Structure formats: C-alpha cells, structure tokens
Length: 462
Image (cartoon, rainbow, N blue to C red):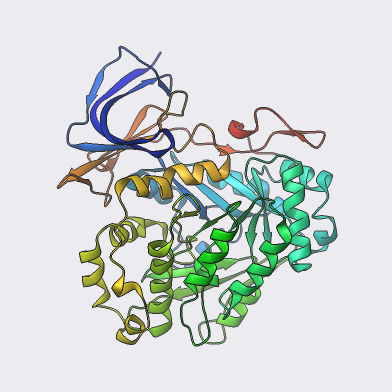
C-alpha cells in the first residue's frame, strides 16, 4: 500500500473551512486518509491546495485536431497540454462541448493527455435535427452513454428560454451531478444579459450553469454590463457560472455556435467550418492590449470577478482557447490578488478602455482562500464531484504545493504536485505521467448509477 505524509504545509481547503492552517496531509492508496505512518514530505515554506479544476475548456476532440492540422495557434499537443496544466497545479479539466459522433476520437485524444483527468459535456443538439428530442429523458440518457458524457451541454437552444427550461428540468429529473451547462444565445452582442435574464426567469428554481459569462457582459458601444449580469446571478442563487476571461494573447474561437466565427470572419482571416453529423467553427484570434475592444473584454472580465460578492457562484475560466490559452491562469490570478500589480498592468493597455472602466478604482484583492474557492472548491461543487476540489478524508489525493512569498502563495508555478498520491511535478518541473481518466455518468435504463460521480472510462468504445 502506498503511503505519504505531507507535513508543515499551510493548507487552504475552503470545502472544509481550512484557511492557511499548518497541518499534515496523510495519503494512503491515492486517497486522503485520517492518518498514516508512511514517509514524510516536508512542505515547509509552501501552501497546499487541492488540484486545480478548469470548469470550462476545450481540450480534446473535434474541432481541435482540424485546427492543429492547419497549424492554427494555439492548439497544444495533448502531451504539452497535460504537462502545462500540471505545472500550474491543475489536475482536472472540463471538456466543455463534445460530440457523440466523435466519441472514440475524443477519448483517444484524452488518453494521450498525461496526468489530467477530464470530463465531457455532450452537445444536446447534436446532430441539429435532435433539437426536438433534446428535452426527453431517454434521449439524454442515450446521449450520455453514446458520448461517454458526464453532463449535458446546450448551445443556443432554438426554442430559447422555453427549451432551455425544458432541458434544465430533464437534467434535474435524471439527477445528473452537473446541471445543464448552457452556452446562451447572443454571445458577444450588446445587452445579451437581457436575454439571459429572460431565460433565468423561466427556470423556476431549476439549477443551471452559464458558460463564459464575460462574453455576455457588454453594453452598447462596447461598455461594461458587468453589474447587471452580476445582479442576475445574485437574484438566482441556484445558477452558477464560469467567467470566460480574456487575456492578451493569440487565441482560437472554437465553438458549436457557428454564427460567432462567421460574424468575426468578416474582419479577420476566414473561419474553418465543418458540417456533418455536427457543426462547429474555428477562427484564429489575437487579443491586443492597444486594441480598444480587446482591452474592454479584458477589463470587463476583471470587473466581473472583482465586483462579484459570491466567489462560490462564479469560477475562474478563460474558455480555453477562446478567451485565452489555459496557461495564462497564473497571470489572471496575480491580477486578482495584487492591486498594485493590477494598477501597473493597466498602464500598458488601451487608455480609452481604461478610462471607460471601473477596474482602476477597484481595490479588492482576492485572498488565497478565495482563489482556492474559484479554482478548486466551487468548480468541484458545481460539477457534483464529491472527491475533488478538497483535501478532506476520502478525497482523491491531488495536491498542489506552491511556494510562499512574503507569506502568500506564489501561483506562478506549482513547486510540487501529487496526482492520486503520486508525485508528478518536482521543483516546478513535470517529472512523471500518472494515469488519467475521463469521468462519466454510468447510466442504466434512464436512471443514474450510484457510482456516477466517480465512474471512469479506461477503454475507447468501438
């Protein structure tokens, strides 16, 4: 039996109310244990967190291989992707829009990602003619089985708020661990938050997760609508969201909302389009600090996070690779945690955008505890993952250790990472590949198995 005891670490574990207390972390057979007598790992001068969770990204499956084949930046190889997440202390990513038509391809690609567990959200309107069946319990059960799915993703339901409410209710009846994951219509359009308000009003308390919220937080003239969209979240505490922040970098629009790359392609290079059993668009993007629109998108995302009073309701994401590549998370965390650094950074971007934003006046600094909420505890809770996002007894022993600088964790790079109790990063360098799994709902006869939160897929379906 494998045993390990991490000692002298300052532990941040919001799910268990631990805020920087120095205590031991005992690991036995890949799980957090109440005690153990194994070898000790001295983590003096470090902070311990559960493995990070990316709540919304695109890491495998169509259309990424197509974009990679066309040398469209940035599409990392599965190997580089996994080791990049590990270097940041992340051990799980939500693959946010997969097609049941390409399940084998998606799982093959996920198996090539070292040490990063994934879970797949299967597109409900895929193929498009399935729209009318998408709210049917048996159809959704079949879809999850065929797509090796953990949850259901809906992109711009044609029936609007009524169909969204029907899908959300079906996911609730099936007792899926994660509620309906919604890409709402109107992405990137002015006042899109008003349509979201109409949708939330139809839910009648049914749970829902809103994807990449920043892309709906624009007012007329590319001004911020962060405050009204945050008010909507506050009025609907049963709704969660991930932020979808923009950062200055090359990026890639990859979406089943095909009208978005079509619209953007009018001003940028042509979009790749694929239509068959599914449909998606791919378009290279470049967010530039001196471009007004790019700067406003960046600022609106920061404003959402800095003004949000409920960290458990809005989690950190970039919608990789749409808003920015996944590897900018440490830079975004630094901007949230350090008002001085944020002030200096704002001096380097479009001045008109900064003048039109409330961000320069915001002094809030996220605490390490709050960072643990938005990158670990809240995503795990939103996803219904009982054994992730925390360091309590029985949790999978995914542990990230960050050096303490001036008494605060330095999130720029994880010093050491343990995946299911096995060390996979040492002194900031990935050193080993641990087994990775695609988590799935195990379903039978339209009803979830008791094992659904931790079911793992090893084999690729024929």
